[in-house]
Image 1: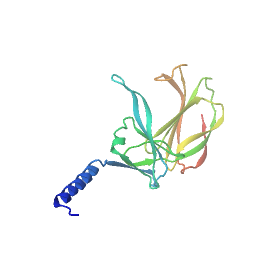
Image 2 (image 1 turned 180 degrees about the vertical axis):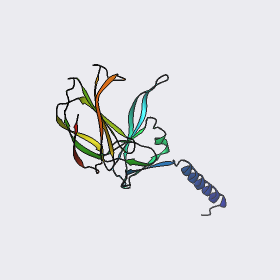
Image 3 (image 1 turned 90 degrees about the vertical axis):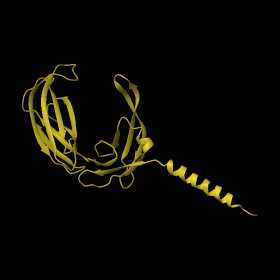
Image 4 (image 1 turned 180 degrees about the horizontal axis):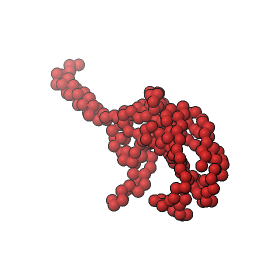
Length: 211
């Protein structure tokens, strides 16, 4: 059978167009790398939750959001987003892993702070009103903060979560406020104080506060 030169020309053109079409449909990717804060150890198995708005109001903006996709980092602590999936993220990315603090995610390198625990003993040395509240605020080196507020106990011990591998600045106050007020409340500070803890990652410390 004789194959004409025209056939070869048409065949080559078809292959070229096919290759061009495939290359044009390839998506850009955005790489995220998650590492442990300070040690720079890559963290595998970090859960990556992608959020988008599910109820948008033209006047008040997004009224509700939900996870539309979940992924995990590989053994190198990495995950590559496709541009189509990344473009759907309009309400943030949350990174989570057992024994680590949740972090906001994005492309690039993200540090995750390991946790530590303190068994904190509260010792009452003064008389306070029955409805007094005890509030703790802990701030880590990256500016992350956690809060705990509860009715001031009469001598008790409870477990409190810290930031591991870093200095924790812990401020406490005893306060009173109007009953039934939960936001933007006026309050009176009865007592206050602060202290520093510097636990290793995953360590459990013992400490106390006299208030």
